[in-house]
Amino acid sequence: MVGSRLNRSLFHLPRDHIFECPICGRPHVHDDPRRACPAIEIASELITHGEDWYEVPNDTLFRMGEDYRLDMEPFLHKA
Image (cartoon, rainbow, N blue to C red; front, side):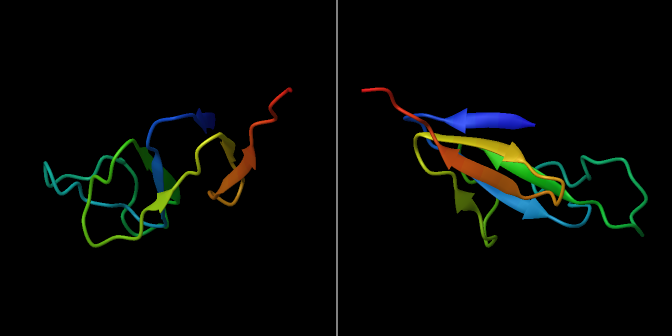
């Protein structure tokens, strides 16, 4: 997965387990709950409370690494 942020808000939250949605109360991943289920949630605004969401810096390109973390680099601007 690749993406970018430019002049809008964007946040990410690494997950290492199946997470029950606080809105509907159901998990959105159909996997064995006894296994680890790494993922990254990405949202334009904070959608849960009490969790450590991280802001993606403005002018940033990102990709999800094999370790389920975001690798980020600033845009290269031409003069």
